[in-house]
Image 1 (cartoon, helix red, strand yellow):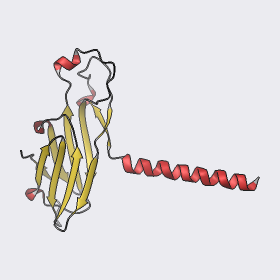
Image 2: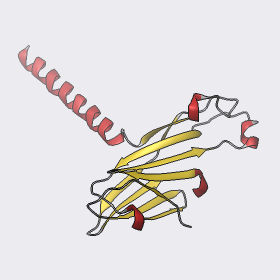
Image 3: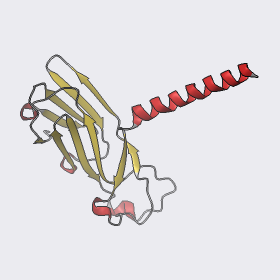
Length: 157
């Protein structure tokens, strides 16, 4: 009976570790979409309130590079800030007037206000940041520095 008990304990630990790893890897990417101020949604139908804004971050010798998939947006609908060692991306994905009148059979895309925070592995110089948004991907190239003043960034075309 003891070998079976040990086998079950090991299986449970493995399962628990797997869920813990999944939660750690996805905790930032799963983003809540909602209305600012908690008001009514602009859609007459219920739509998903969570979506995956997949990101990748890496360092070069001189900069931190972040890419985030944010499809279906215009650059004017996005706001980007750096505060300390965190890059914050805010936006609102709107449901168009013609889309609101449709009767959906399947609706998996999320709409509304969202915010995504990405920790920076190194201090960056926001004044020299290069930010672009092309083909649904936001790219920020942030030169490394030791000072961390909060700054608002603009998206270039």
